[in-house]
Length: 415
View (cartoon, rainbow, N blue to C red):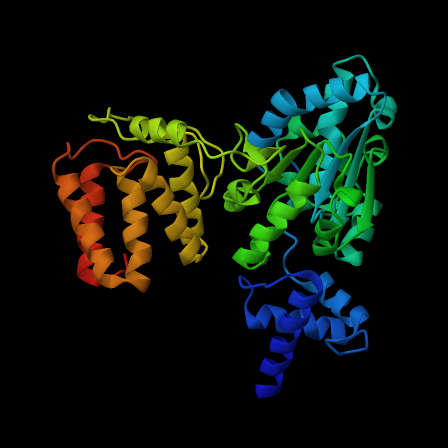
């Protein structure tokens, strides 16, 4: 109905104005469902802050689970937090971690459990950890913040994590599908309702003092230009040396922020002064990324999730970009898939699977260019051993990839 479409459009405008949330990844039906749920509680008007807050409570933007992305938590536990604990001890203060867009608390609880383990290795019991570490979770949804404060998680948020990572700190609550976070973990955590746009605008007054800031899978809901602006504002408000971590799909924001030095984990950067242009190192990097004779690769190197970003050259960065391109394509995010595939090819123009993803996505927006890319891929594949494995595509041979590309060209874009 026209009235429903107008209500959704009005809600979209109000949510972007109040929270910065463009919600381009959500359908009108999803937003309409959130509006209907909020309206059931009264005050059904998009301009009313209370009503708008209840809409936010019901938006499906809260997917989260404990220790989401194992590689990140391993890296934090080995390369980041030990040094932060040492520095905080020298300064006589606790380590401070901020989880932005914390939803129902899984990310904050993960950080707390990890910190507990590091402190236990130093001889401190879990009950004493709250004197040495603080984790603050912030989310715009009051309902989700209240759920985080209760320390109750659903099965989805718990059962996807490796049991060893949980260290016995999350146990069944008695009710089916419910788990309770150990009080010693909750003692490290505080949860507050907050608006990311306002926090970024406040700069160091709000963000100063944090050693680690996690802002993962949050800025994907903002328009690209606004996400880049907010990334810069967040980074600019941090103390020098603080670490800011974006998600795989947002890792290009490390460069966009302008004041972050990229770290080993894709999507992570260290706050500091603006970086000076460095044309010479970049030129050397391109030379390494495009060797005269590409060595055969038997497998896709292990890599953390990634998205378009200025990364070190080498097969790991190519593999990471290919992986993210495929994930974006599978989720229907065409522009992001294009961006990631192009980033992979910029690092290694001969990568077969990246070229396939690029061709598939271009078929939707630029068919002529897509066909040229796919024809080049066929020619490239024909010159290789047909039984060779395609890097980053487990179980796929060069011959099978060539057949798939030929079929894709015949069918005009669908396999």
